[in-house]
Length: 178
View 1 (cartoon, rainbow, N blue to C red):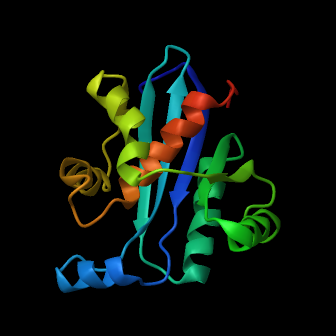
View 2 (cartoon, one colour):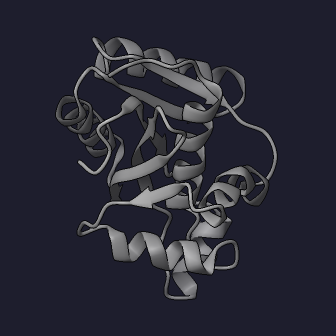
């Protein structure tokens, strides 16, 4: 690992929903439906951020749950697990289900978000522009960089949304040595 002073890590999930009109438009444009994306990011004691891993999948709900659990097991209990919480009772029910049945034993919670995806990505983008974000190379890197380059006008926003959520969790949360 390039940073010996990691103080906190999180994997943030942007879950793909059932096919909606935006998914159908992407499909017609050759993009296909949205992805579920899980971005693992760490923060260092010196204030740097590092994107360590991204899982980007198209699976049914059971497949998504299995992937989330597998990544939590791989990341370890020192890595917090977060996801965007949809509004209303459905979001609360999903969060409760995930906590009890999928991610029991891990520091998991949902996060209520507001504003557009572009607005939510702005703070993360500022850190990238400031040279404070590093990206480990992996099989997932090319797809992430392509999405980031095309954001917000590209067909996908899932990885950027998850990266912005991971950054937000690390920048606004307390320091927790992993």
